[in-house]
Image 1: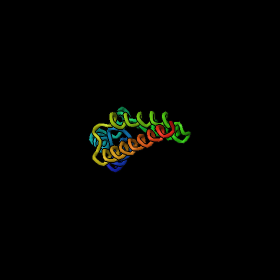
Image 2 (image 1 turned 135 degrees about the vertical axis):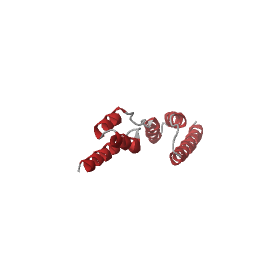
Image 3 (image 1 turned 90 degrees about the horizontal axis):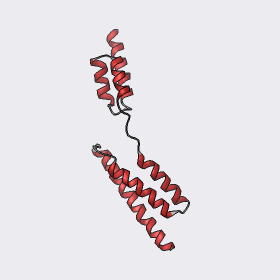
Image 4 (image 1 turned 180 degrees about the vertical axis):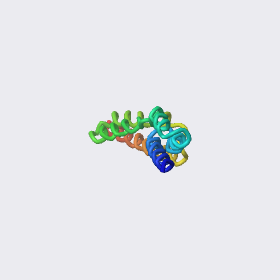
Length: 121
């Protein structure tokens, strides 16, 4: 019975670790090897995942584009591109492909908005 509780609590610690940089595997490992309580402390002391800074700028760009403030929208999209190109290191290949697709999408959006700015002028 004690082993079942130990494993159950270790799985719970692993699930909490899933939402942090430590991940499920390491959190579960420490909870099984040392104890679920120590594993929980390790998880709580581990770093939280990095916030997606690009998303804020992308959303602001969409708002400005909606308001037809194309130059401001371009600036926000370029800020989003900066974060996408510089903040995300050591991604899994599938995540990096998604990041590259988003970069291409935002670059084409910036080019289209520049064309609109030139045609309006």
